[in-house]
Length: 186
Image (cartoon, rainbow, N blue to C red; front, side, top):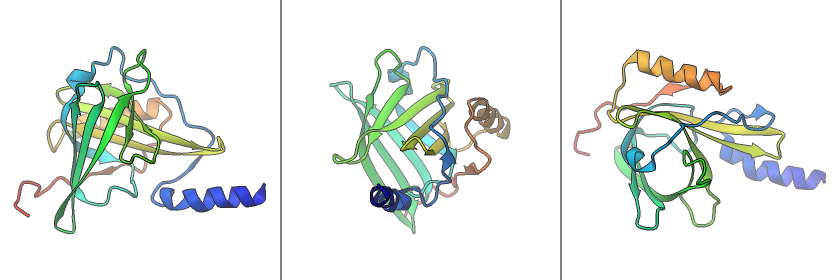
């Protein structure tokens, strides 16, 4: 038993290095009521985030495209060390009764990760949350404030943080994403 726990932690620890694990299982936040997937499609810019090991660059954005089979083509990009980097994944609606609960995978060998739309007006902002339980002992979470433009008013960002906090999601470590000089040629 001890050996299996050590192996689990040895595998998971590198994945959560930039994250701060929280004791207990993931919270169950409310998601967008009457979510319309088609309206959510398109380009979203990362405005603020909980720090994530897999996001180190600037000018982070994601483009969502609905495919004929109702899956979602997900293309995320960032500029890192002066180089544009892109990764493509697949998204799915995990629960047809609750279409704001998406799952996204950037690898054929990894399961879908939760990508829950907590709130969106479809034209300006979206609040996204993802959380993974580790043996129900602790959890690692991610949260993003997205915008249809590279910047949002401070008041909008503060309101977004309140929505996260009201859903028991700790955003005290949330940081602004770097969206400056994104339109320059690399």
